[in-house]
Image 1: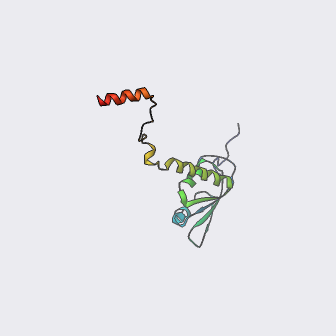
Image 2: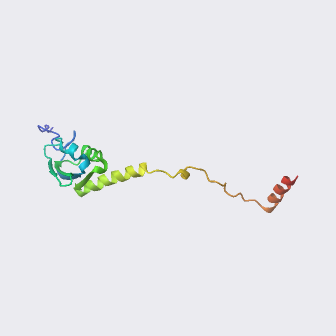
Image 3: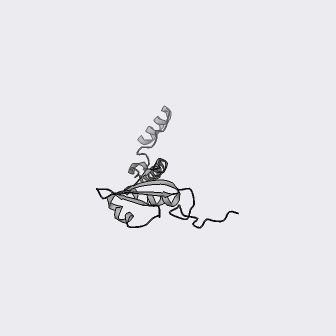
Length: 133
């Protein structure tokens, strides 16, 4: 059995292990102070832009804690690299959008008119005669 390393989760934002990947995320100015004020991982590097937004670079594994963390910032975060992570985050947002997309009010209503009933001429004449009586 292989012994655990001294820091088994050194490359994760959570309790996972894996090979570190170069991650780059842009954060809008509205969340930049919150993101920049905390040490999320020892590998993080933050660059502040003139418009108040920041770019964070990390060397962490692409795992569920990382994805959950990014998704938690909603539209205020955008993955720049790697492209595969950006695509996965996009697909996750797209699935959420589909789930929350409002349904049109008439989608759930029954049809206004019932489907036409096929009737031969004799049935129609009997029905008309019954109404006259």
